[in-house]
Amino acid sequence: METFRALHSARTPLLLPNAWDVAGARILEEAGATAIATTSAGIAWAQGTADGGVLNRDRMLVTLESIVAAVAVPVTADIEGGYAESPEGVTETVRLVCATGAAGINIEDGPRTPEDTVARIRAAREASEGLFINARTDVFLAGGGDIAARIAKTIRRADLYLAAGADGVFVPGVVDAETIGELVRGIAGPLNAMIGEATPGIEELRSLGVARLSSGSAFAQSAYAGLRRDAAQFLTSARWPATQMDYAELNRLSARG
Image (cartoon, rainbow, N blue to C red; front, side, top):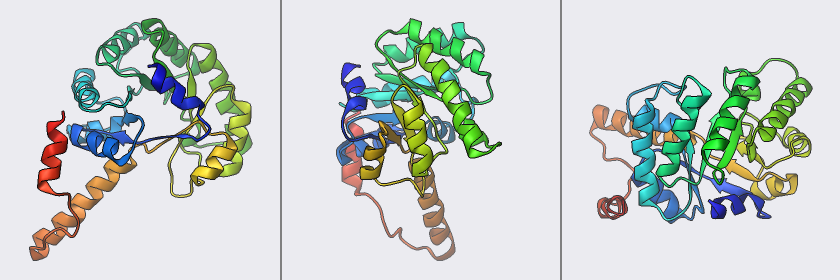
């Protein structure tokens, strides 16, 4: 856990790719990832459910445990809102996550009130003192109001979540440098952004003070886009996929799990 925590105070932002299965996690590790996150969306889609609190907690834990066991780098788990109806349930979720060997969690507010989210973060903190808790707020994903109002609302929520025991704050949906800079200056903890088509480059993110950049569900979406493209080519003209990983290499990577 301390290794993962230290990655958030480096001079260069932690680039955190998100995996949803063992083979993908091993590919990310071999590509040079110093830590890996899970993506609730990718795990849900792979198991035939929608993202957004629909995935069963036990099924998430099975995937998380297999990923943690397969890689040598720290793994942080996307637990959505905690996979529970109450803060007490979040305590149990986090206890089970810690048992897998995960080094951190991502817990989101989504449609919940800030007060409910605060209670969930406190429950998570009580369940594990050393776990890195990244509190996600969906103010920018939800939209509404002008940029200044959304920035102010995000900072207010960040203050509440950090005071409740969060170690960092995740603000998906923000990609422009000016807004990112204002959030970094206004939030009294490490800022996690999520990759987007217009996200600044690594040097600009470093100069802005971003601590962590996640890929979110982007790699899962890319993988499934490739599958749909290759399937269409196969089913219409029996074409061999233009790009694929070597069979033996995938076997080797998966066997590490």
